[in-house]
Length: 90
Image 1: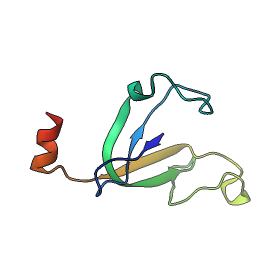
Image 2: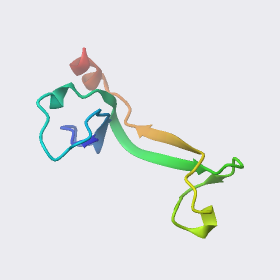
Image 3: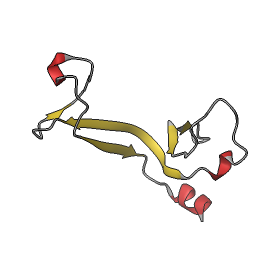
């Protein structure tokens, strides 16, 4: 899940949810755990079954033998904390 953040320099914060149906609002929306805040961007690297890395992946093509990747490396670009933001979180 992606939530907007009040920090202008941050694009969003990423969260995880155990909910399956997002059509109806959750009564415990604020209780969903946040995995990481202040993410500027994400870089994804996909790996095939031979361990070769790829910048993109399309399981619907013959190029990738209609398979899902064997692994995905997720590299977040985190916005550095400032003294003000550290104090706000304490």
